[in-house]
Amino acid sequence: MEMPESGWAVKAEDLWFAYHSDLWAVKGVGLTVPWGAFLMVLGPSGAGKTTLLKLLSGLLRPCQGRVELLGHATDNGFPPKLRPRVGYIPQQLGLVRSMTALENVLMGALGRQRGLGPLFGLFPNREMERAKECLALLGIAHKARAKVYQLSGGERQRVAIARTLLQGPAIVFADEFVSDLDLPRAAEVIGEMRDIGSSEGITFVINMHEIPLVQQFGDDIIIVRDGMIVHRGVARDVTWSMLQEVPA
Amino acid sequence: MRRDLLLGGSIALLLGLVLAQLGFFDLARLSKGTANLVIFSRETVPPDLGVLPLAGRALLETVQMAVAGTLLGFLLALPLGLLGARSLFPPVVIALARFVGAALRAVPSLLWAVLFVIVVGLGPLAGSLALALYTVGYLSKLFAELFEGVDPEIMEAVRGVGASRPQLARFVVWPESANGALSQLLFMLEYNIRASSILGFVGAGGIGFYMQVYMQTLEYQRLATLLLLILAVVLFMDIFSAWVRKHYLLAFK
Image 1: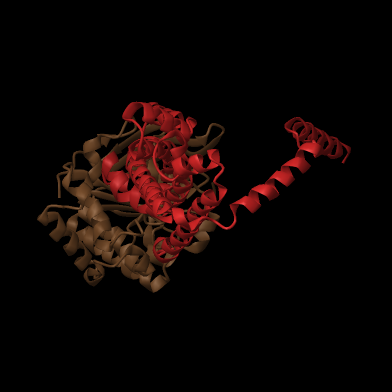
Image 2: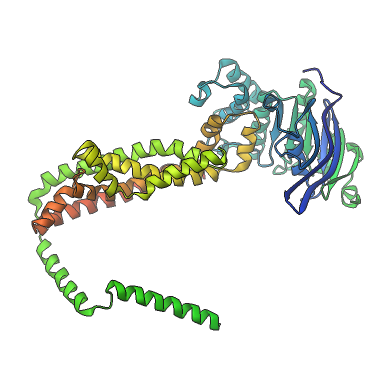
């Protein structure tokens, strides 16, 4: 793991963002995430969780405010060198259905492969081996040659995680990516992610709405409502009523 | 209600005026035309099968022109379609790519054929090039729209790992659009087989040359054989396309 360049993996100050000029999706959010944290973001649908995650990960640029990611300011343009160190798993996983699990995982290496080889499906042996290791780590090495459309929901989740692991990120942002799974399977996937995160020293920021999973696996939580952070606390203390009642 | 009636009445009146101007209400002319059609039909039967060897060769050349033109056009339309996709390139590149496509599309394949007959001389090469250019214009537009329709979440996820534009095109845009693109390619092939049958009118190769000769020399029975052959090929292509779509293009829906 690299040495932290500042005290925080993520530091955001007074973030504002609107998709349309008259409707703020994120309003004045300030946030710090320590290195190696497993932070969970909660909130009702439409609260601005996805937008906040995209702002923090550099996929959206704030209208106002400042984001420091892995010690680099990103609000005035995302430094290209930083991109491979920031993982992002969208809600629908962002997998290419007609390609195999292994091919999807190998996409995680594209940020450091600038030659013509990958365009013809040729990756260096070390990337190929590492991709297989990532699949094995998540218990789906036997599905490497299966097309994504042939995989179950849980297997797809694991492919998306394996792709992010191959990327070799220092931080991963994941957006409600286990919401399609039943609770036991979701717990399995999150548990594996948490273990890998601990051993590799990866910071996680995860949007989540399953309270039992938050209590079981989260360190800290923040609750987002109406585009603002209305609560920050410890994951094991969170309750469903708390999520409903926290005033905006 | 009254406004709807007024609008409907205005459209009907406009349509009536246009039809009248085109001669649709000239009953004398229409009845004479019907009589001519009956005479023409009588003169085409029975089709003269003696021209089959000659027509078969010409038809083969027609199909070759259509296949070559479609494939060449497809290969050129792919990069042009990518350059015209908003999800991949900046507005200046998109505008330029779309302008090139629109310019190629604005000229019908028959006019491209006239141009290429002047440039490369009479024969199927001119016809193939004409079909290729029209195909580029047509497919590049369809491809650009298809490529833009790729799920933005997949684009975002792979762009997020630091993938370059060519990598995005190779690993996301093409695999996600391949089904639709191949379906459009088949449609274009069907269209080009129909279009290539008349390119011979201007000397650009294929069965069209003989169609024109038989029409000018009033040899309608021979013409009928050619028309039946074209019909058979077009029907075969329809069946072939449907088979390919059913067995290969829906595999992972």
